[in-house]
Structure formats: C-alpha cells, structure tokens
Length: 298
Image 1 (tube, rainbow, N blue to C red):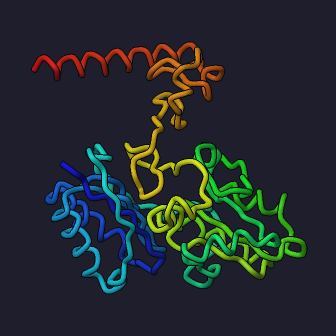
Image 2 (image 1 turned 180 degrees about the vertical axis):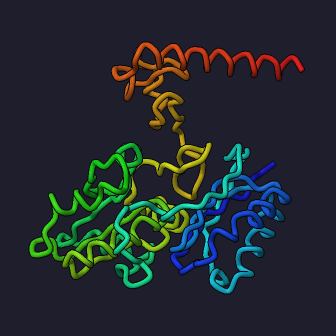
C-alpha cells in the first residue's frame, strides 16, 4: 500500500510541549502512523508516514492547537513504509545548534521561492552554502555550493567563523533538506553581521517537487532520513542504499568495490572498523538473514 509521507516544522513558543507528548503519541499509534516527531519549547519538527486517513487525522490533531493552526508540510509518497517505528521525543531544540541565543522566532534570512532560486544562485556575487552534513552533501547538491564539511549541524558556526567574512561575502544563499536548518543558520549569520542572507523556502525537497528536471540546477540526489535513503526530482525514490555499519549512503557502484560487505562495511568505513565491531555486524547480519528465511518459510 502506498504510504503518504509528510515533513513539517515550525518555530513557535510551546511552553507546554512536554504535555503534548503522550496525547500526540496516542493519536499516531491509533492511526498507524510511524516516524519521528520532536517537541521542544522552541517548536515542533517531524517526518511521519501512514495512510492518507491516518496522516490527515494526525495533522488535524496538531492543527487544533492555535499555535500550530498554520503548520505547513511537504508531501511525498513511498511504495512501502519508510519508517519501522514511531518516536515522539522531547528535546531542548528541534534542530540542535547548541546556541540558545539564536532564535528564529526573532529573525531569519529572506525566504526565496523555488521558482526564484535559480536566478539567485546564478548571481556571481552570491556565496552558496549547503548547510547539511558531509554524508548528505556527498550524494547531491547545487552547483558551486560550498560544502562546510560538518559531521553535525552544531559545527556550522565554527565553519562560518573560519571561512566566511561579512565584509567580503555580501550575499549569502543557503539551503538544506526541508528548510529547518536554514532557519537557525540564517538567524546565526545575521547575528554575526552578514546583511544579505537568503534561504531556499521549503528546502531541497520543495525545489525537487516544483522545479522541472530541464530547468533544475540540482545535481545528484537528496538524502532523506527514512528507509527511502534518497529522493530525486519529483520526489521519486532515489538509487542509494545505506551502510548498516556506518550509516553512510552507498551507491550501486560502492557495492561493487572490495571494501563492501553487506551489513558489515562499505568504502566509507571499512578502514575504521575494529575487530569487535566487525564481529558484531557479522552476527547482526546473520540474524537478519535468519529472520528473512523464517518469514519466507512461514
């Protein structure tokens, strides 16, 4: 059965966020909806999947809260369930930058609609920044975008301090998967003296949904945090798999290399694995094979 997938976030003051956890979890469970939702005092962030009826029910539940009445979401589809479990978590931040003074509710960069994005990033005076992490950038990005080489988003401020100067980089255009990281990244950069900071509204996902392939400046695929691993133009399922040892996306070409062993290693992690971890991954892989065989024989 086709699954409806929605990604959403909103920065808004939610002083009672902890009280929302249990009833929201219950509604998702009742409707057979899986995925991850994060609640914090600064807002909500989530990606969930289920039937059309189930997703509509969860959305209605969320939007019944006046603070979330205008909650927007990005819609896509999956041929099979993209999430195996449901998590509704309480955290300090809905996207972790570890700088409490950065508040997107106070100010953020200028939103740029996907249809106007190509014009902006084609300006030679614009510095284009991909705010995502290394493993995400590896499989796709916009042409000429800077790769901050971060392992986690909390390293982004250090990248800015080391590589960017508000006196030299007058125009900044930034983007991320769905837009949420750019809210904090742009707010931070404005606080550091950068005057013209633009962000792709709706993120890469909205761009791939709306911009035809013939007009697109996107190169590659877009990593997503579910069982689809990646999506391409039109939000169609991509061609990547995931290394179950290190979590790095792997291509079909990666699987032909001698460093690749299904469920154990890939070209990105084979030289970093300890003997102990190899043994654990081998045991886990064997358990998965037994489980598959058991299902076939059932």
